[in-house]
Length: 344
Image 1 (cartoon, rainbow, N blue to C red):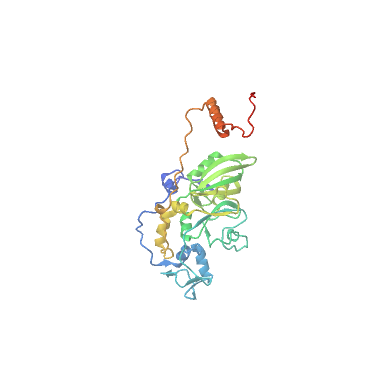
Image 2 (cartoon, one colour):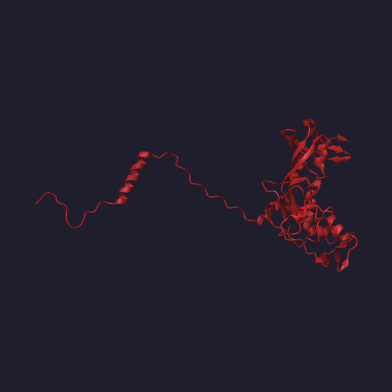
């Protein structure tokens, strides 16, 4: 069952959404006081151990210990990471926040451990990468851009609908295209009792019985694109994420992973990273880069201006002749027998 309702307070084209695409100013003063106590799941997520839910499952599985004693419940508040170990290894302070772009192929799930034994994204990552978590998920048959980070708090912030980052997809569907129904998705829909916020959907081209759509949304509910399009009679047979906020897939090969430059990361996320460093006991000792101290690109050298008047071809030929004569030099007389001049 599908119902179309009025758009929520943040429509796809609203000014409120546009402000989220602007870079943060991380040089502003942050009045947020430093944290002195924190729930253990949040602190370990900030330290890059995993998402909060993953840390809670680790605790329930008996993998987390404090001062040698196995922790039995995630309902625990800590003041420091000292003495905390996961799988017998001590937990260190959070490292510098890093972010990667990964081109996820089809056939991989976006979890660290799959109960069904299916291959995961993290099984295919290069061994030199630190422990990372994904920003959101792509299901088994979806492909495209998947952001990876070593900072659980950053991943959580990027995933929140209130952050407002637009996620773009190229979607191949099977079925009859009704452009009015596609446009109606921009008003928000309700499918099987689940409310979905406004979705931007545009027809790109039709190829036989299939069609390609461009889809944009600002929240990431489970299988949202597939369920919403199915509600208007379209079956998704291929789904490719091409962008997540300001970060794009570009020409990244399938299965490849590339780290996003620190400058680009702090340009778009610097403000929130500075706030989170103070709000977590796992990141208070971290040094936050200052963009004002970064080296600026040197200006390019000016090119020499071309002649305003065309050259005279005759004058050029005469100059070339004079140069050749000077290079050859005057003919020198031969020594020895002088040439006869007709006199006895």
